[in-house]
Length: 161
Length: 161
DNA sequence: TTAGGTGCAAATTCTTTGCACCCTG
DNA sequence: CAGGGTGCAAAGAATTTGCACCTAA
Image (cartoon, rainbow over all chains, first blue to last red; front, side):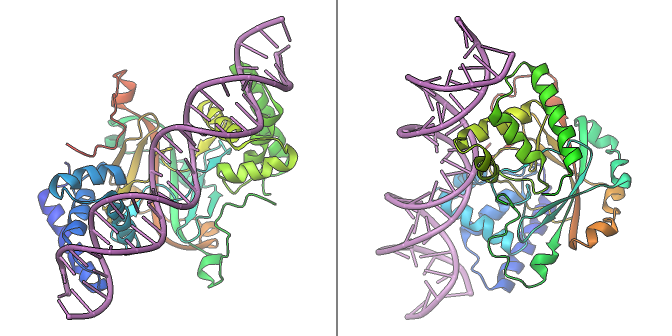
């Protein structure tokens, strides 16, 4: 649904090569789970992947889907949509602003940028719907995490005092 | 922890006015829950808000925190970090690309933009950590949702057939 | 006063884990 | 053949809901 057969094949070949290189087994399930995500432009959740794969591999289980998705994310073959696999987080800053997200610890740091604020969505996007706001998400690894320190517990949540 | 007292006061006054305007009650709990989010730059999750508020309102309950956070989000006084309150979703498109997110149904539509791909994070951000990728998130309401159609079940998850 | 709001506890939903059997390499 | 991978079922987080009491307006 969406991704061209050529592109899909290309992604699957890349996936197989990456699995071999990583030294993990290329099982039927893994291939079909990857195909399900790579063949869709809907950014399916685990449940949706499960439903899709089950039509081709009726015995597949939901927990294998979860394990495989996170495995593939660790290998860099997939990405996730939100900042992380964390609980939902809230923001009271209603001014236009942007985010730096640490892929390691989940830290989210706001920043302002006149340049980014001035961006306008492409015409193509305006055709999809009406736009209310535009936010740039910069992903990377924060100083704390790349500095080799243990990051014990400090998962960006802050919280307490 | 971060937000200046002045800015915090400003946000809280705005919050109170908005509550009055919306005709909802200004309870002690709501004020403290809002204060907790508005006073932090950490983008706390529900649990972290709960811990913080409990120090000032020991009887507050976690479910009130949840109810209040979503209420405030509905009123436009808070925003959430990820696309929505949905299950985690995956993406096999490893090329640089950007997202349109429908705030109503959760649809996420990819798009490409040479202009956005060329963006560079401000120096200020580079000081926070090493950058691996930059993605523009455009939020709005998709055609389907604003078109007044029912959107029955189609929460962007696509999935099966 | 009184309707909306809160706290409690139980229910849901999403995701992870332990273990015995199976299949790729 | 051997060890990683899978399916099952049960556990564990995160979040929501029903109901009786409480409180802001």
